[in-house]
Each structure stands twice: as C-alpha cells, then as structure tokens.
Image 1 (spheres, rainbow, N blue to C red):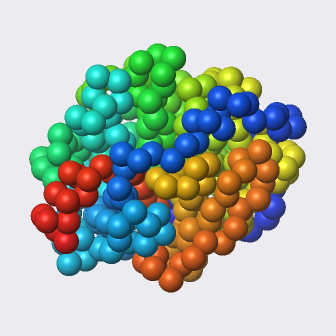
Image 2 (spheres, rainbow, N blue to C red):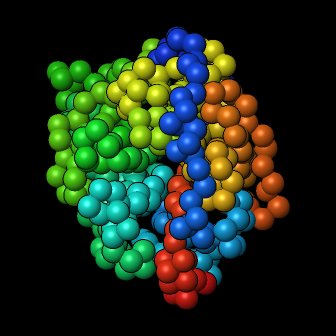
Length: 342
C-alpha cells in the first residue's frame, strides 16, 4: 500500500522480534520440494493509478516470465465501495476446498478520489472478495467489513490456510484511534497487523492483533514452508524497508529474523509477496514493489535461514506491476486461462 513516499526514508528497525534465527528443521526443508502437478503461474496485480485487477500468466513454467492476459485490460473492476481495488491477493482453496475454490481479496481504495490522510483516518473497514471454482468465472465482488470502528482503514488484506485451525487466517494492516475520537481527528497509534479467521470469506471472527511494533508495519505476506514452518515478509512503514521473519512453530509460534534484529532485505520497497518455484526445490521468488520506480522486481533465495536474496532475471518480467500476488496452477487451469484471455 503506497503511502511511504510521503515519509522520510530512515532506517528504523521494527521492534517486533529481537531473537536470533533458529536452525531450519528437516521437515521444513523437505516441504520446500518442487510440485510436479503445477505447470505454470497466475499473477494478479493492480497498475499504479489503475485500481483494477489485471491477470498475468507465466510463459510456461517459468517463475520469472509473464505475459499480460486480456490484451492488457483489467479482468476485474469493482462496482461497489470506492470503485477501486488495490493490493489484490489470490488464495488457493485449502482443506475441503483444495483444487475446487479460489478467492481474490483486495483493499477497497481508489486514491484518486481521496487523499492519503483521509484514507487512513476514515478509510474503508471492508475488503473486496471475489470467488471462483474455475479461475475464469469470478462473478460480482462483495464487500465484507472485517475491522471495528476504532480503526482508520483496512489495507493490503491477504490470507493463508492455518492447518492447526482448519480455517483461513486473513490479515491486514490498520491503525487505531481512541474510542472517544469518533471523528478520527487526533493522532492514531502506529500501523499494526490484524487478523481474523474465516471458513468461507463471508463471515469472520472478531479481529485481533497479530503483530504490533513501536514503528508502523504494513503489507504482511506469509509463505508456508512446511506443516508448521512459515516465513513472513513485512514492510516497516517508517523505514520504508521490507524484512523477513521465520517460525518453525506455527503461525503463532516464535518468529525470528534471519540476519539479526535490524536486518532487512531491501529499502525503498513495499508490498512483498513470496511464492515457491514449481520446478526448483527450495527456491523462493520474492516480489518487492519499488513504489518510487518501476514497481515489482523479483528476487530469489534458496536459504530462508539467511538474509540473502539475489536479484533475479527481469528480462521477461513485466515492469510497472504493483502490489499483488502469484499462485502456482495445474495444466487444466493454465490451458483455460490461456484460451479465455491469452
């Protein structure tokens, strides 16, 4: 979510975790195996001042090569709420919905109709949701309120399946005002990461705080490495950098930061999104949005116990893509997407 261009670029480390990284567990490493059932990738993004959802299909099973679908025109345009969607995330169904359902969720915000200050004080507390059983037909969006009225906004929603709960954990960034400040005219606290559970993306549990810090944090993305191992990527809004943490004890376990408490991956970036390579075992691709430049750039790593990321080949990666997401897809879905919009 782009707001940080209005803030000074200072390297203030988030105070979320101060522990040192743990060793990778054997089970987590095994789980990072390539998936032969996936033959390509679908990426969904918004484009700068065009707050709609655009689809990009990989060229074959290349995790770094994409082409725009629908002749570069948007696939989904919201008609409710603000009429603009940012930070779209596509979530593959899990549990009983595995291989049968996909969801797209996003921020309800058209910044061209408001200001960044208003968007944080009296912004939408609802998220856009689309769902599909075939990745082609998405129907009309619905707006679902997920946050309480003391919040100023809900930004960059994303979700991950929590195997310990058998439900989807949906998370987003919000900042909060005093309950006595109903007009949200005073000073709020720092941005924090909130969450709620859902089984259908229609009803949600009461929101709670997932991650808080002394400085504002937004744009959380979580990658599952194994049954109980996860990596999460967060933007320090004050420092305008993105850092990574790892847990081998579940989503609510002990999170540690590889490289130390002040380490980060890159500065001047936001909207991190990580996905596994379909073909190369243990290879992770990380997208970072250079909000003051040409949008998403890809990076790779094969060791999530170290703060070591390599600039990836960008020769076939589109420029000017903004905060979005990528999911691996099987042959029938790849063919269907290519036939419909290729």
